[in-house]
Image 1 (spheres, rainbow, N blue to C red):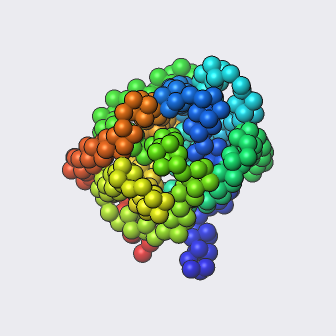
Image 2: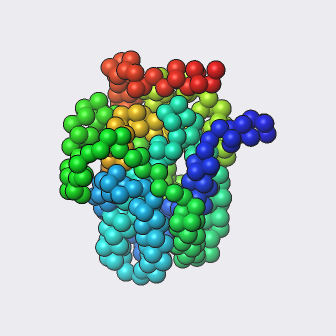
Image 3: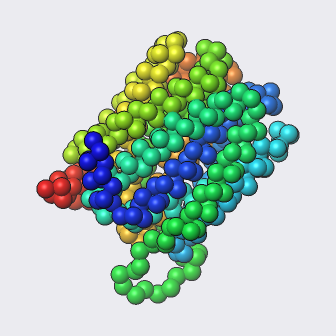
Length: 415
């Protein structure tokens, strides 16, 4: 085991591990707060999940705009500066949100945080794709999943205890951790943006932003985005409505919810390397369909089970889907993208998270407040079935293209 880890470490460049280390620290701060945000809003301000969902939706709408601008700026000016900007905004927003006492102020702040904080997301994904050659990206994104989930073991567990005392501690901790990460990025990470292979005419920022039209008319890529949106609509319930559902329907307190979330992280840490070694041998669109199948089973279980052990089992099943789907989706997005448009394609790929963030919490809130909450999980089953069919259709139409034959390249490289 130790020899295998040592071999893996030496096969990847130093810059990759520095990026991974700073990402680990930052995710701890995010996971201290993110799983408990809906609980905080509903508890502090005495509002329902509909209002909390609107807050999350406005944040996502603004995030879509911020990510679009950030992706263009990362392709034009580079990745490092945009990532630093996002970390500084995250620290500022953590301090601000923790001290807001008027519910209406959350709307303005959610727009600001979404607009500014999301600018760095395409740059981060593009940086990983910059650093790693095509044959290492599946494994590299898998490693990032493991590192993220190490943080998930720590973050929600600590966050559950802090939330039990005072939610303000969550916001303060996130601000401090974002500040520390910004210092490390500034000192340790170089710029990774590829230099143009040919000398080209210098384009304006507006022309760079206008380059999105190439991604938006790439029909196969957009079909992949739509299928992924359906899948992530279900997956994101884990971070928004699930905590409120377990509290209100099954009387699960934040500490036990942290335990349920940490079970997902432990599963990824133990099994992600093994799973990545398997999935890179198979067609990527089929792996996306398989991931969606596990989401369908896991999230569907929440509509039928009622004990902590079964909640944890459902989360483990969901996590199997996560281990299969998350690295694969990142690799597919990078495979669609021309090198000079990598961050912009990653920004459009961000729609697979932004759109579900706009719709999912709000729609779940309407169901929670007006109908049987279990309908959220029954609808999730239907959405997963549609997404599975879409990914299978993409496999039939696109699977034979050279850019999606990563498994063969990886096998040759391993030999």
